[in-house]
Length: 323
Image (cartoon, rainbow, N blue to C red):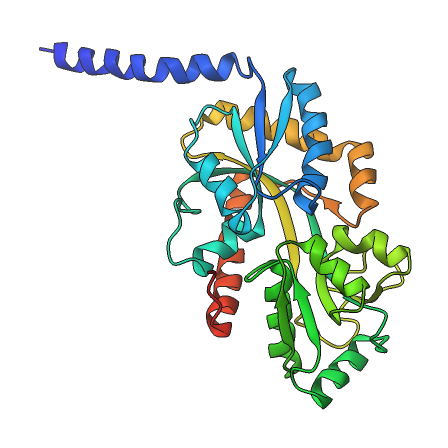
């Protein structure tokens, strides 16, 4: 009479066994950490020392694999479609997880369902920088310039719908000004033209601009964090400079494909938490204006939801759509 139940129990055991075996033997081969942007960018800059550190604790190589394009969505789609075995991970950013679902009419993945968030590893603000031809030395002065000549100031970005672009949209709304958006195919080319005086300003990601600011090629007017950056202690926050609601921080974090065994998630979380607690990693990231951070997978999931709510509102109000 109990045979059907016994058979079901046996079947369930057979299904669970491979997952348990996978978790117990994990990792047994190299892990690929996919950065969804080209080499040399901020995500790449942060991913490489983290990958090096976790490879030591996991006992297997962690290979950084750059799969750039379409504001991070190509690399994200690749990981979303990978086997959920812990050997293909996404070094995710705010762009492809919190912004792209609203920017694009359709995506080959659902950011809310396709991934198992593990933990953020770094957080950093944007910094408003101006080139050599702009006389403004404070946030208030550049707002006055923008008010005096609507759309007269050109703000560069790394692309339509990028963090740089959307921060400039927030700036316009909150300051009651209009500027001209000039999108580029990446943050590097955008910063080159700001330093060359071809474009006036940019809300650059702090790690990408620190060296140029310290080298005197760019002037920093304000950072968009909740407090001043240790990398630029003399630069005020936008809040201190009079824009109390201009607070924008960007995260980098690690996500696995949905369905990855919980034991594997826990092993990766432990390795990542240990990596970002390492003084060497903290120092290397602090030098470029990024702070290490780690949370539980549940808290990271909540961050993704809140970021999506923020940026989807900004995107819709500005009428931005990725081409």
